[in-house]
Image (cartoon, rainbow, N blue to C red; front, side, top):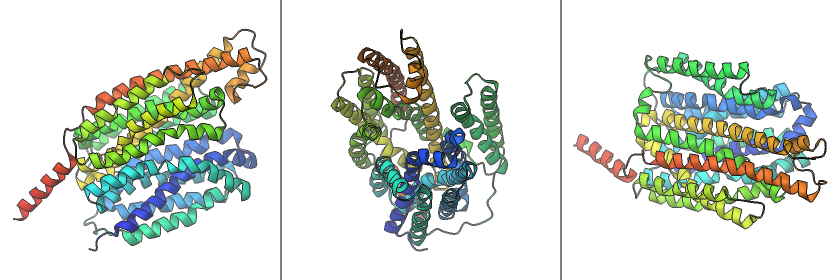
Amino acid sequence: MRENNKTLVLIGLLIGLIFSGLDETIVSTAMPTIIRELHGLQLFGWVAGIYMLTMTAFMPIFGKLADLFGHRRIFMICMSLFIAGSIVNGFANSMELLLIGRGIQGVGAGGLMPLAMVIMGDTYPLEQRAKIQSMIGPLLFLPQLIGPTVGGFIVSHWNWHWIFLINIPIGLLSAIITVKGLRENRREGKPSIDWAGSLTLVAAIVSLLLTPVLKDTMGYSWSSPLIVGLMILGVILIGLFIWIESRVQEPIIPLHLFRNRNIVALSTLVFIVGVGVMGVMYGFPFYAQHVIGLTPAGAGYLSMAFMLGAVPMSMLNGFTLTKLRYRNVFIVSFVLPIIAFFLLSQIGLETSIFTYVIYFIILGAGLGVLFAGDNLIVQESVDSRNSGIALSTVQLFQALGTTIGLNWFGSMMASQIASGVNDLNELPAGVAEQVQTSGIPHDLSPDFITSIKSIFVDAFHNMYFIALVMSVAAFIVCWFLKNEILAHKIDKEKSKVMTIQQ
């Protein structure tokens, strides 16, 4: 079998990953126009919700199918689904059709990221892969930077349909380049597919993740019978899934993965980071617009100061993770988010923009190790035949954590701001509702504006304190990683193979 063409594989995968990520930010920018033209305000929240549901639900399934049928074949299927969803969206003339297309796109996106990392693991040796993955993580934040600009340009100069149709040639280009560069051995025998486990897992994930979507889109409270019933159903289905996986020949998520210390530690770590860090960071642009007074674009770019710390530290960690004990690298790195959130919990109305930039740089520097290290350690902690499902499982926990964090902190922020504003005395009629829906009115007296901004500050103090506690928990989890050097581990495996051959 010919070796993979490393350059073509890397180019093809990067094109696919960047543009699947870009699709999300472009769609967010174009949503007001789409809602206006399709008259779909009542279905607004479902556009992101259905994409998130299908992506998360199918992530582990594609990981396992790739291990059974080959990474190249399943990656091409995922890319085809993403393109098919883009076609449906591009020609959608109703919100219902748009939601169908977003669901198909989400299914395809569920396999693109984990399989791209696995394919790189098949293509590059450890030290090269460490350096490449340390740059890919920050590179995937590029869509966050340019997405709003690209989305605004397309909507202003063409029409919103092109934000989806442009995915077709780009997706095809990515697929052609990847297929051209990637080679795989044929798989022997007929693999057994765990259909019962797959369906049960999808049902469990949908039941659990449907609760925040229904809360946001339909106005249900967390205590409503439907929401509580869905959560109970999700827990029951998870129990049923574990029972099924313990009895089938080829489980969709092998339970032995959870006897692997690194898999458990990293799954827990990315879940905590998703809940406590990504959740609270998502709300900062709202704070920046209404308290600091920045434009929406300025608020977004201020949040990206995070990358000024993450990018260089990710690249540095790409070198250190194969030279030093990676547990020590993670432990030292995760001291920085603790420092950053302690400082952020002290912010006030007089805090300067420069101060926020410094705090976000510290936070990014601490989390840069995840960009470089989590996927790499997962791949080197399991047999190659389980690399796809291992990566997908860890990324499933990350997606679940992020989803929970976004909704938890979003609800907390809205509740505390609403409570604080309603408690203000002599507030003009209708202002409380306006603050909760569209921000602080500019025609209020300076005293009222200062009081409302102080309520925002107090809400974010509480959120950052919770994020601080979550950061301490993440720091503790880092101590449970194996205390080894990746390069030494690979050298031992090579020596073992050579000994067997002799």
